[in-house]
Amino acid sequence: MSTSTLKYSAETSNALLKEVMDRSGQNLMSCYQCRRCASGCPVGEETGVTPDRLVRMILLGEKEDALNNLLVWKCVACYTCGTRCPNNIHTSRINETLKQMSKEAHAKPLLLKVAAFHSAFMKSISHFGRSNELEFMGLYQMENVKKGGLSALIADIKSLSKLGIAMLRKKRMHFKLDKTKGRSEITALYNRSAKRQGPKE
Image (cartoon, rainbow, N blue to C red; front, side, top):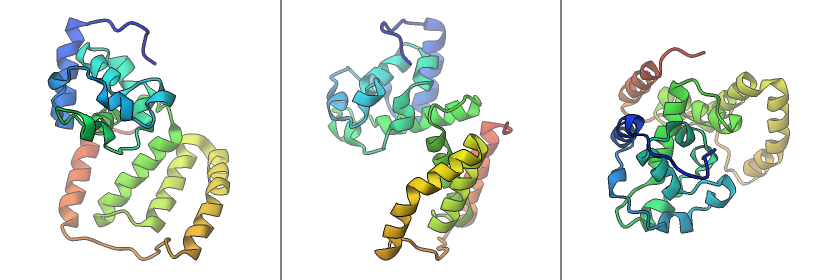
């Protein structure tokens, strides 16, 4: 988590700032800390880090704190921060970038289930060009076993069984494997991203 006082590091700030801005497509230099994003963030209070503070960490070169905080893993991508920001900075895109950087560095995720969900979703998209629920759920549970063991799988199935039954009753669970056009392009993008992340542990 972040320290109580942010410290500027000239050696790391420029490199970190450039990487995050290039990969997220967000101009962090335009942030003037008005905190409108913080007032609307639904998870900022429970994570202890608000979007404005995360931007400040990156600007000051606090790479370790930027990569290792709950906001990166608990962000729900509601885009409230971006719609409130006078300079159109979407922190959810920054969080996605930091999540990818954390994976590339083979750092242990703060929330294993979120990491498993993210990995399974990306794999499912690469296969059919869109997420198919049946395949996605299977991949997610396999990731759960890898990251948390059999006990994590059993606990997750128990907690989700009621939701699954309710979705089936309301016909919200689809078992058809839908495909989309341009799957080869999507697969190529996924493979390029996987290659960039380097070999898996």
